[in-house]
Amino acid sequence: MTTSEFATVLAWHDALDAKDIDTLLQLSTEDIDIGDAQGATQGLTALREWAQAFPTSVSVGKTYVHGGVVVVEQTFGDGGSSASAFRVVDDKVASVFRHDDLPSALAATDLTEDDLVS
Image 1 (cartoon, rainbow, N blue to C red):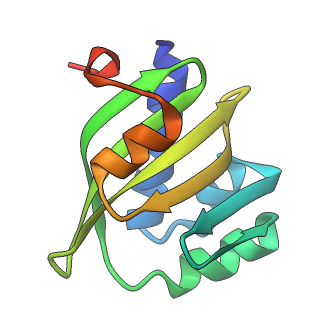
Image 2 (image 1 turned 30 degrees about the vertical axis):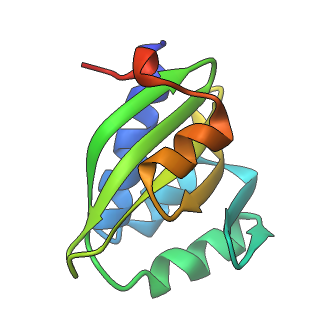
């Protein structure tokens, strides 16, 4: 694990939660991929639109890191939860894919409990 991958994803979440769109964009690659089970989109314009429409606050729970991939458990202000898988390249988020739950995100990325950040 590198501290920068972990720190990048935490800062990305902080910016999303604070609706600090400029910082969110600075922490992301120009061609960022954003997706979930319903589909995917790409680029900073798409990220801006997605973040502006994001309906609730988000907090980070368990975090797993290995080889540029970061999986975080997420809890939302409306009581919902999910997990997202991030790929970090050169201290920027290159992709984020939202999964229904933590086991799904871990399975999709081949991360395990051995990759849990304590």
